[in-house]
Length: 235
Image (cartoon, rainbow, N blue to C red; front, side):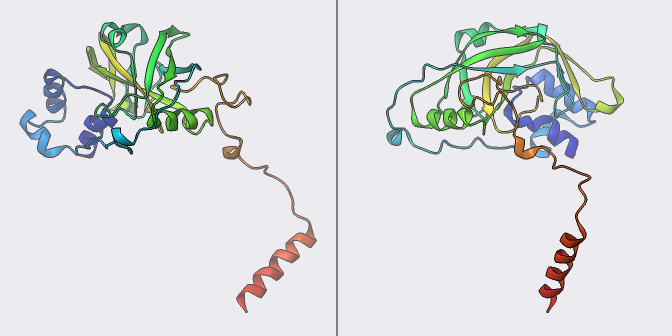
């Protein structure tokens, strides 16, 4: 049941059709009508501020280039063929959301979308409202640096890879509906470009997470001080 819950929750990123749910239910050996009772659902969270509380501001002129998707195996064991996207819905309404929350105000709009070096990329320009500015600030600081696509499946098949028992290969005809800025994205390649506006360190990571130096030997004097401190703490 855990794998079924994991398969269908997906952070609201996949807009499953009825025919998809029937296939998934069959794969897990249950009836389609049992999905609602057997699968965890996650309600959309409300925005932190009401419309009345939003402070007026100036829309940013900066554009932040993101990789939105790639053919890499994601957290759910899925792959997406990057040449199989359909853009007609997205191009008419290229909204940027926060964490796939379709019930809240968008934080901006996407432009210049296209597949580059095997990755779907687009440029984000933030809105002027308060919630959008909060997200933009964290993107500039590189606190938020991941993205995620929200889409409706087209043709897909269960993975043949034994390491991806419940993984899905999305083959073609997947309809892009939106793209979101997220804290933890499913696709490991869906990252903010290193040369986007903000910090100038040209890194898409943090030096704080890099491993400390290993193999450094402590001097006898240092070890003696550590032992003495430990003994003092016991009495």
